[in-house]
Image 1: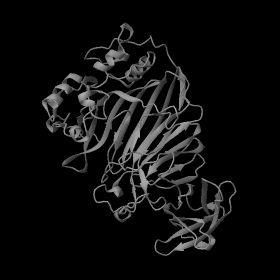
Image 2: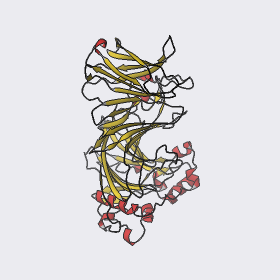
Image 3: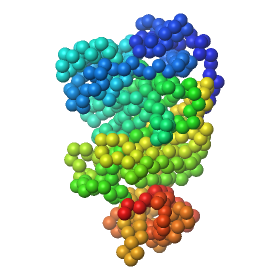
Image 4: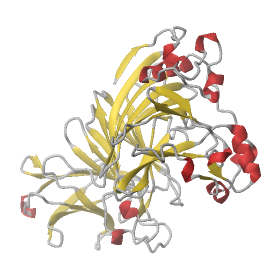
Length: 514
């Protein structure tokens, strides 16, 4: 991550403003110094950066409100608006990718301008009712009047050569999500998080404009650019997207804060966790587990691998994992067995994980984990991101980049054993809390050769035993502690053979359930 001085916003060249041609953006940048050019201008990444810089020099203008008849559409009525397959961009061309659009309405109340870049020139995608099947003529007329879209989805022959599967969606604020081969949608990512879970309320940046570059025939990757805007920051984003067995994204961004941002989240991921073995459901449920992600994984700048099982707390929880120059972090759906979920429709065992690997030095800060109480699996209640210690200053460009992958599993460094299961119970004699942590054992180390570093916050008494798991070939750690009057206890387990760590560092925040 780097900071550079912010150039004079008035010195925006004619070339740098490119062929934006977007009605919503034109209104924002009205005036001689910000006049947008017509069709025929060459598109460039530098031009998107210049637009973000120019936008940051002006006061924030919120998106125009959608007509009430669109913004109040119910779930079923909105889903009845369908993009016509024959209208798909590049649907009948040699390009292996195609694009379908989303109409504005319901919770997707912010209009977005979308441009296609072909032969280096940008042109707007028409936003009219002709491309959509609508439930009524009134809705069709409203879509034509609005003249903007709500987002788009990319298609590619991901699973079979003859079928173009949907594999990436950009829709709503700065949200986007993706799948790899054989997966179903689960968690999402965000371009930027600001003031998440702060008492003053969260600020949600939005993508105002996208530019999608047309790949050449036979090319298996695509590039998307986005112009981000919010009350206190603008940004120019580039997404290099590579669909496959593990879909990959190369993401780079330049931010222009209008004001100082003390709480900002980079590489933001959003997911859902309801219950599992370590966090039983509040109400009876025939499904043993319900979640899009099982835990937060992190590889520190020092090479230590952390595993923090997620929870659905009774009250808002925020956890910070301090580090310098992190190697990676992500939300992981580790269990891939249908029997762990028993859900024929949701198929939670097929949900992707997401792994953020920073490019460059991200400096000092911490991975922040936010866990929000939830009673409905349709709500995302888990957020994780990197929070720079110093925040972002006003009036300075800020650049950062990272790789984002959507795998089934996230491999561990070396021959570390991963945590395969976490569960909670109580001892029979005194009824003390007992945590059970199962580890894989790739080195086949005997239980009597294992040493455990264990702690239970506030120097509470803690005991452990290690047993070999003959069913899995792994190791099981039983951790017992006495909470006394503590309402939260930070637990930590790390297994060693001699001086060498043989498994992930397991972390958990215990709270009484009785």
